[in-house]
Image (cartoon, rainbow, N blue to C red; front, top):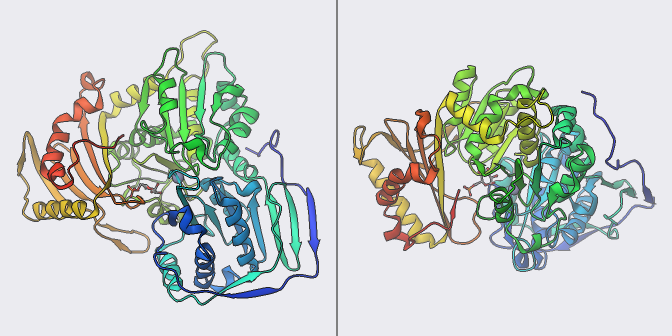
Length: 578
Ligand code: G6P
Ligand code: ZN
């Protein structure tokens, strides 16, 4: 499985700019700015706020003030982003403050580009101390929209709360910013820029990541599928970061036809779109996959390339099913040939994966929402494949969810199922693969209803109302035809470090395994987003072709009535259904 190096331009020494005389560090006085609390996925705000004087600089300095000395002085850091508006200016600010604080080397993706999983891969491959990702993920970009920044640690994983809390604390007492007086670095060409002891290396954001993927997957097998006349593939990069990866990987390396990739140029405003790969926002892809003469496999990824959606011809693979099916077909992926170590999913994700874990006799973990909870399990060698209903799927090859990885995993499954197929013979389709899986394991019908930008007070009142119901509920309570097994507020004790996360979602679990779960989103940027997750297990093959909305209708009605959602929020229908 030695990495091959054909079509991608490698970083080998383009220009080298040397300023041996070094540089001065200026100490810029500053004052704390309110509201710089770093959430689960870094700090996310409107661009305007980030562009206000010292806003970004304060946070970056607060971060350097929070890291142990050995991760700052003489360290190597990676810098990348999803190409959104303000990234270019932000990159220069970050580079200057890093130099001012004694960082030895910054590896920057060309044009400031690198997807979230690629940054994770680069940190690991180059043994960097950490890295920055300039992204607000799937939130829209452009002068009127969002900007964001995340910091990942040396394992390639998002900074733990201990660090993000420290950063927040430091933003509240910050007095000065240490900034190197170096000129802006040309980030549009590969090359090395030296300023005294400080180096900026502009790297190809694809190379290390592609090397890793070549070790994970069977690229010959993938190539045979993507160059076959009997298979058609469409990838929607949503004008976001995977535009920089899709062509080099799918087209140049794996031989897919050029027009397989669309919306393939990263734009600062994502072409005005909302780069979130779900049935609502990836409507262009959905139209193609449900249109006449639809391709065999369609996929999309989000702003920073960590989410994914996979569709077959007129067929949607729910993210909960996707992770279960990838785990069940691990033999199609060389990286897993020595066996899976364990499987994990977030709590609201359907139980399809649990059934695979049981069948394969694998350790299984149910974690709170948030990719960071998988990291400890992976570092401890307890988890190989994991996923979340929120269109996140991945493995321990990096420490982030990985959109392109998930697409390659699905292409691998299709290629594996069609090994030995002769030209002209019928393809074992994505739908066939899913239905066969359901026949073996049963089908977990799953849907999520989102109510975005609700009034926060009303949403909180609804949650309190649900808590009071849970407090007085008991096993055997009747909800229509459903009988309550347990109702609780999900809590998680990390099996590795013993840390406890409470209040991670309100659950109503019924005796037949059906579940209704309520959560407030932790990633919204305005008001409160209420999420209701509905799941029902169906072993009866005859019912597997039902539409999920139809199959789940009785439970959905119960979910709306228990929560009194309409009464509390005034909403009569969700803004997004997945
Ligand atoms: C981000 C996180 C995921 C999480 C998702 C939804 O993508 O990386 O781990 O599942 O947001 O979170 P939310 O709190 O909005 O439901
Ligand atoms: Zn993302």
